Length: 508
Ligand code: NAI
Ligand code: MG
Image 1 (spheres, rainbow, N blue to C red):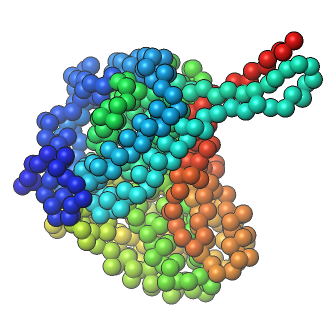
Image 2 (image 1 turned 60 degrees about the vertical axis):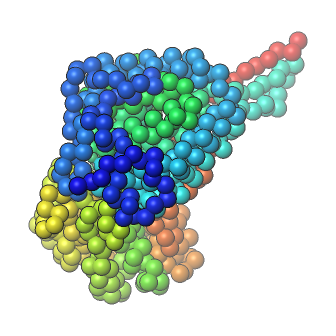
Image 3 (image 1 turned 90 degrees about the horizontal axis):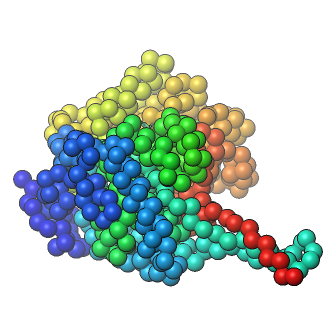
């Protein structure tokens, strides 16, 4: 039995103590939407269960939002945008983000535990993300002073001054997936709060808890009511209503490419601005001269981290044929060392997948890989035993995959590596770019010429060299091709939350 203690009492504690705690939000029975600073019952009165994917048990019930709930939240966000929030100066917004940073830091153990219970991410991994999340909030705090236009030299003659102004776009709809809500919510909250926008968040139905809790902390930080609202519910109901709402100015979305297309269509009515971070099938290219002591674990965790539920996972591992046998035997050995199991156990490397639906989907891809003739050299089975009711699957490696097989073309979103041999750098590059996606990519080599060719040649928003998956919010990431558009991180991110206006002043 989990001991129920109020999480305010949790500070920097040992894993064992943390494991025995229950976040306070789970002791409230059922949860509503958070609209206009208050918990609200769903308009329909309907609820949905949210599960712990490690046990299959219901954690709590969420409000099942519909168009009426979304409309109420958007009206609250609009009136906060036109009202109290519009009077916050950039420095006040910065102070607020700094306060939010401090509260997230103070409550981080609670948030990490909540994320672990809701998403199945190993608690140790969730705790290790602390630096990344706090850095991201600080980055946005630093950007409040960058919402600035320019004065330009007069190129038209006469007594004119020309300048540009920046203004927040207004109400932002934030739609995020379940694979890492604790960080993905901040890419939207941070951008909105830095620029003076207001937000209606629609977290994924499978993982809404840390978004609700963070919104509560923002109220505690002094954010005016209505600046951040959270409507929970299904994508086809609450999500679709938000994407269509005529008074939402911008949608920031992370999720599947198919849903991204639906959002593009839904945005047409009122010409919403969009930022879409979608799927990937990222290449990870290992040359024979690479330091395999780093490349093997690097490429393995480029896929296995978060049980493969990462948009930029390096799922197509291209290996130079002359080291293929050695590489495969070493990555299989590495895969065998990974401990899959209870996310609350400090030794666990990989937790479950998020849901039965995802387990079925990933298992389906494993069967297709087998049928199409790839060599299954590790894993592939659902894991039973102690974790019988959770959605666990073994770390899985296919060797001798060809780039036209289904497992090399479609986003699997599970711990499934496809190893594809190549002979020349040209061939590696051609195969790497033969995909509809372009989110991430990496090269492992000690040769500067090879690195340079790959760095320029890989058609994706991010290329890692002798590393994988590093994200710095000051630079950020984005996508080529079907991986979406609109940059996350860096000054371009903030610019996406701003309108620009040109002003011409006639001095005569
Ligand atoms: P999804 O893209 O449908 O869900 C992401 C978010 O969009 C959730 O909050 C969902 O409620 C919402 N949503 C769904 N339909 C919507 C609609 N019509 N309008 C507005 N919002 C909507 O992804 P799903 O179904 O959870 O996962 C399916 C596959 O998508 C995964 O197997 C994976 O391949 C991919 N995926 C990719 C992600 C990434 O970061 N690249 C994240 C999550 C899923
Ligand atoms: Mg859950």
